[in-house]
Length: 389
Image (tube, rainbow, N blue to C red):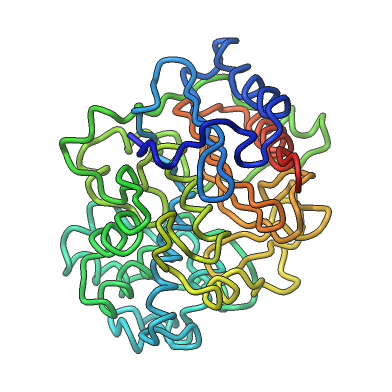
């Protein structure tokens, strides 16, 4: 359970408009009340604290959720600490850190490209439990082949590049990846329920993933004039595998983080408040946050909507008027940054307003268009909560 010191007495204490907050909470509750989502949890942060932390449906504020690709922000900012300490350079060749990786044309892949999804091996195979055996995981890295020339295009790497980043963290820090996240991020921030690699005794608190609603057909997409999403490794079976104890324990660096919405919102509070924990402990320097949130993908676009992807070091930057395609609300500022997760998980911080959000649900809606609209609707309402922006 989140420590009481993180929770404000009233929303007004943090400069949050209570009427706007109530509107947001009603929107989050809507699809739970309708019976579509079994549960949903939301937290809103500002000035280092929470203005709201609520859970609806078959869950409580003590419930934990798998946040899927929102984990990428945590893994990436763990690597930022090594950059901050001079132990890692984004211009380095991956093969110079992980020699086993430097095969089959991957010799020229740079560290930066792992973060920006421009490394060229978006669908490289890797079972989550491969991580548990060092020889097996290194054999996997070695066997991977490129789909395209590194740096030449953007194509989302759902898990592959983050496995390599986790390996780099282990080699350059001398610690297990999961321990590094726990000891260098979760505990110093006071976020005791932020887990990447969940201990067995915590599993009973996790809300199992369930799939709800009906998916759109190819004819539906054609009728609406919307491009149909490509088939990727993010399948229903892949997502429900996180209901398994052995998968939760691994700490999948690209999608296995398990926590509450409060942990997500407070994690982003630290990033938008100069890298400091609530007690003033400096985790990330302002310089490394600026470095990590600089867009590095240039004019590269996503494959589906052909919008600029705006990728920084593991995070997505809100940017221009197309920000809703990147998982932000129309009302977010251009400097907002974050990373969503499969099933509609929402996580971002906005430096201009000081607002951050964590939204989790275990109801994975098969209707991707509805998921996208829900995310924009919730983010729109969250982004303008400040009574004194």
